[in-house]
Length: 76
Image 1: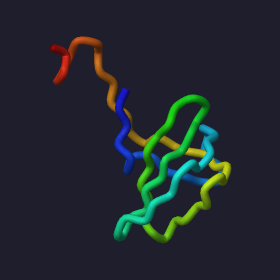
Image 2 (image 1 turned 90 degrees about the vertical axis):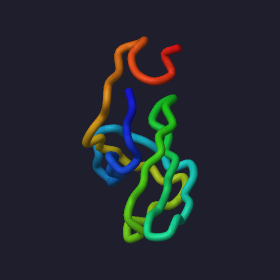
Image 3 (image 1 turned 135 degrees about the horizontal axis):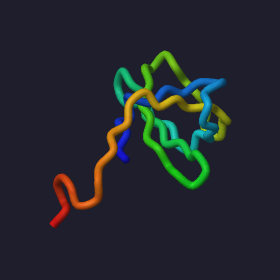
């Protein structure tokens, strides 16, 4: 499964619980690395949405892509 960073929303009430591990400012975006259980996800938000490192939040995934094993690039 692949999820683009811009297809994830951070909020106080999202259904999947996570914790902000890293926050970096990148021009008009804020780039986050968040941990949800043992998965680390990259999330990009507008610079108007700022969450502190260590903050417990929720995420909503708006779009994900599923790939069957052996399909696509890199399948050798």
